[in-house]
Image (cartoon, rainbow, N blue to C red; front, top):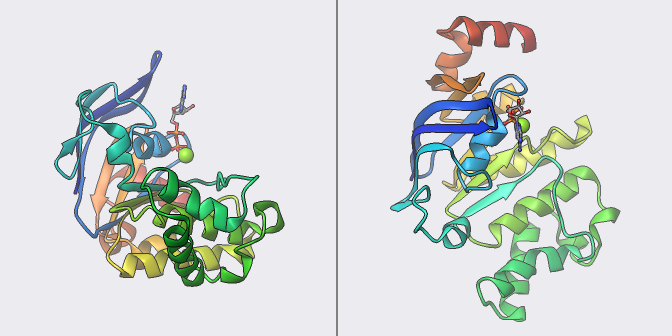
Length: 240
Ligand code: ADP
Ligand code: MG
């Protein structure tokens, strides 16, 4: 459902993505790993045009989002995004965070939006926090709200940029568990992560990015037990 062809991104003179091609099938879970600064976030952000690709093409289903004529706002509705630092609306309750866009963008009534929001909060184990404000939640709770908020838009795919990197260690699992459950529902997911255990267990494929190049694209069993490139070997040696 996501197809990337020869994607380049430069910031001024800095070549950040140097011709990336890959596809993410409907229902696939892809873990994107690689050293800091290798272009993982930029790659992810190009997929919903939070960054404007310099060259190359990206399709989301049948929409070529790199075509300036494509209505990107419409395509973005189909792609949920979860960030390292949650980005919740601080002045809204948890319920308000989940109902805002469905009402504003999708035109749901308050009743419809709240019903859906409560179902999702129940799924991520936070129904009891519906009326709290974000600053009264733990990091793990905030991130579960952020995931539920993205799901409230009923996306076809979800992008995660280091969703557990800002969390205290004891909160990592509760977020990964929510993501694992989501993966099992058949959601298409692209996840930038340093959680190698999670990548091994949940991902269908690992994309290893180094210095703006997609160096390896392989099933996790293969990637972790038998990395082909020296760069991947060196990276895994450092972290495992
Ligand atoms: P990663 O997520 O793998 O750590 P990023 O995609 O965030 O890497 O960054 C890749 C490179 O692009 C880094 O050198 C970073 O400094 C640079 N970069 C990212 N965003 C911008 C930007 N908006 N302007 C200039 N340089 C950027
Ligand atoms: Mg990053």
